[in-house]
Image 1 (cartoon, rainbow, N blue to C red):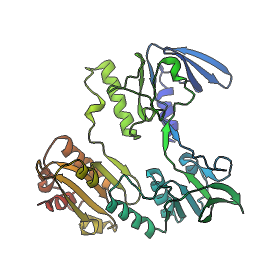
Image 2: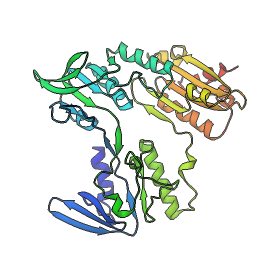
Image 3: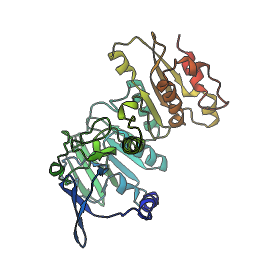
Image 4: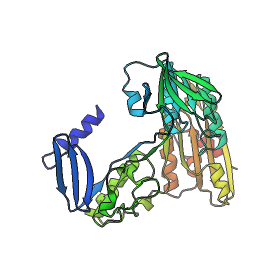
Length: 365
């Protein structure tokens, strides 16, 4: 529904032509578009690349030929819930789907090739997430060297050195990469990095003077709101004063929409200590928050890292109900370069999850 609505938001405009097909560059002003009924050549004074990202498919025997193997889009199109779901990859996409399907009653198994779960998060946060998943019945297999995938007894068999696992559907969540293959960017003089992401400057200009790149195709943070901000930067460069740039977004928050959601902004404790800063770290169990008890979800923990010398917030991790809303408050304080005491002493409505920021930052001594 939303994809169709977004399509018609453009297609229905009198001054916009939407052309469906596969495009490649002939030169920096010319595109060739392959359509079902033939080819079409288009020219443009300015060209903007926003092709997004695509799933990374590991080189595993049978992965692309076995029925019942899906990417995230395909899995959401199923008309029946699988009783058993395997997830190849324990990153953020895999985590969201594991939580969602476990909530529906599916038996979920995560196959993570790395020896550590969620290596970008602090260990205490990762361990708290692990406990929540295990309480849902999710099985997490680390160091999972998946060697082959095949069909067996109407199910998907996932083969590892330790044994075989049968699931009704297998989600490939091994990451995403910029969707630049086939664009023939070299014909336009557009350079890419080693992962295929288009190289841009702080104003999203590529190495071709008349071409810009926005969103996931640059290989940066893959969030919808980053793509939106990319649009603002390009719009300001073309129609405004040209002051907006990617340098303006130093504190980018993110949320992983599991249940309860994980949200973070700034540095982890490990990153902060590695930077050489003198920091104090405090944690608050969600069970201590009145609103969490009212909502009957006391799982999780709140964590803050504060620079002792400057009193500035270095980073915050929130694993709790409504964390995706709370994290934006923290980001605003960090962007304004305000001390942590602003959140410690702020008057919040009661009972809310936001007021727990009073309690969290009151632990700083």
